[in-house]
Image: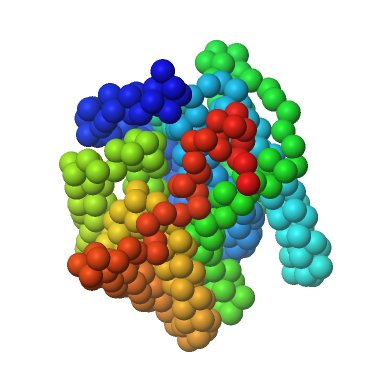
Length: 453
């Protein structure tokens, strides 16, 4: 039997239990993320009390900057490498995907870190805190090797959730034991970035010594460049989305006082908790959707309705509970974060609408559409953010988040309407396939896991 025929037969059998296994994986990943949220639930009020609003603002500003290296080093591999692992049928193919992916990540992390450290050393205000940035970047480099795409592509969802939860619990214990005041700001940064680094080391120990899913292979610069090119569309989308989030704190740090940064950073974390869970759940389903099972109506209903409903429920909860919950949870000094949290809650409702449409487009490999919408929204967000943060502080920045979410949801709706009109007219949409989702099997087979151009 030919390799392609065998793959299609296996894919057909896998499709029979798609809905059941998708629901099971969603629950496992969701529980893992919920358990891992013990870290922010304890670390945020601890930081607000032992550091104070001013030094918490300094920490959040530094975190926002070093976190920019995370999407750069990921470069869309979270989904493009996941797809390539899902369609790979041999250890050799998977090993080449791993080598090319890690090679690309290492190059991007090194280049991005060098540029950021040069900026830190050139700016007097940041130069005095260079150790803070260096510690964060070093651990981000280790964490970039965490192969979520390999674990999920190989169906090791339970281990993925377990490593994620346990690494954060270990970091939380170390944080509580060692961070006692503003003098421990570097340690605070270390424990913020430690979970992914620990999970990366633990996962590769399991992969190399126990599971043996891959083995060491040599790769070439040309293969690494091909992998980077393959990930480009999703990188554009990921970078745009992360820029929207990171720019809030960065711009506030530039035009407002640190207290306003602390207010917004605290409020934003409540929203990020919801986004983190739902992103993890959706990524756990991508291997099945990538193998051609995205026609399963039950899975699609689960993703679209579940995501939108979860976002809406969380947003309404924040709007109602923030006035009394935020001062109790973060302390009286952080009362100013309550109205910001309520606005973030409103943005979550709109975020659910646009996220559901994003997942729908991603499942159908319309990566160019996803990248285009994210880029448009990012430009509009940053342009509006400067005057809003200047005049309104944290509240103004939160209001811009509402505008950005509404804009993305509207653009997806417009694109959907255009596709329906084109279908009725007998035309084909230009967003049927994205680069990351259209690698022919023959190309994968010829290169034994590498990309041929």
